[in-house]
Length: 207
Image (cartoon, rainbow, N blue to C red; front, side, top):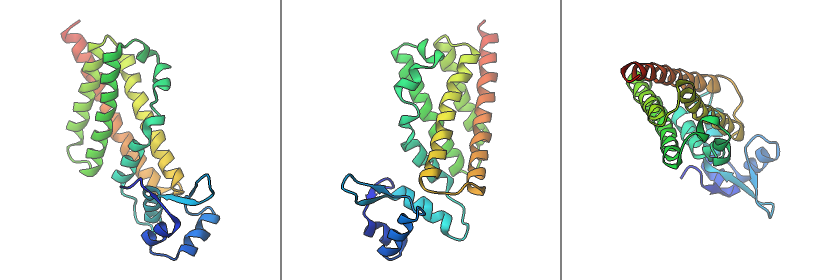
């Protein structure tokens, strides 16, 4: 599993270098490292792999792996406490809240599918997710502004988690960040536009 913990020697084996090299990189703050309560170095496999990708002659980081890592780390970004502070979320009953959390998973999986297919069928994927958010908002009595706010909450949580993944892996900002964030923004913008268009069509059909 990508998020398993590695010892110093296991990290060195994964990177194909001597353990002393890994120790030196860690001491210099080059390679992301965590410390146990006993002071032992531990490395998260996903962070080591992401860091290694940036060191290989400028090779591009695989965007799907970044999104997958971000989704695994996103629980703090969409904790119940943060959701409770949202005015649109306060209007929902427990069933509606559970369904909105499911909508968040649909967004994340849709983005992974979009990145995996290199943009193929992006429009239909964005339309499907936009329709899901719009119909759910109408069903639970949210207006179009609240529907957009709900979507943006989950979109922004995902973006914050992506940035956190890069920062924890000590990946310098630059083209890797820019390319991925542009793709995320382009796809989620399509979803938001489809959400608003679908909501308006539903209003006209059922005023």
